[in-house]
Each structure stands twice: as structure tokens, then as C-alpha cells.
Length: 166
Image (tube, rainbow, N blue to C red):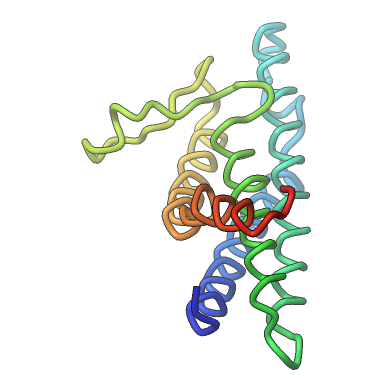
């Protein structure tokens, strides 16, 4: 991929990660398990524990990726190979962590993706705050997934053909 294109993708990805990080931090700094599960329902307690754990993991991955992209963009000579590796990592850590959370509190239902409806389906009915955050994040990560789709398949194929282990 051309240097100019990779640099632009790094810049736009970094901007989207900054937006996602800000929203995730705001939510995590102002939400607690007790607030989310005001009814003290044991099933919802388990649900929110998993949701908060997944959200914290996603925040960490996004912060690390944001910093790595900053390093890519600040270098005096733009290193395409390193930048492509970082973009690959963004796809496989941040994007996949969002769409395939470990605790499976929500999932993406592809049947709704083309109807204009929200494609995110929750295992249990969450609070409005949790639902709104997840839907906002899905829009950001959907854009990232589209922007970085090259790094899901073509980048790996190219590296393997060059004899590298991934």
C-alpha cells in the first residue's frame, strides 16, 4: 500500500480510537457495578460484571493502539512496514475485541446491518446508558472495520508470501 494511503489510514484510525477512548473512559469513570445493577439482580450482576470487564479490556487495547499509531505518525521518516503491522494489530485487538467480547454480553447480528437498525443484540436488557454506549461504539468500530479490512486478509497473505511468520 502506498505511503500516503497508509499514513492517512493511521491518522484516521488514531482519531477514531481517540474518540472511542474518550467515551469509554467517561463511562467507566462514572459507572459502577452497584449503579448499573440497582435492583441487585444476581443475573444482571453477572451480566454487568462481564460487560465492565470487556469494556475495560477494550479501553486498554484502544489506548495502546492509539499510542502506537502516535509513534508511527511522529517518526521523522514514516515507516510503512511498522505502520501496517500496527494497523493489523488494531484490527485484531480493538475491532475484534469490540465485536467478539470475551463475556458475550452482546453480539452483532449481521441480519440487521443492512436494514438501518442497530446490529447489536444484548444477552440481557441493559440500562439505557450501557445500550447507548455500545451502539455509539459499534458505529466507531464498524468504520474501523471497514477502513482496516485490508489488514484482516490481504496484509497477512502478503507477509506470508514474503516468508514471514505472523
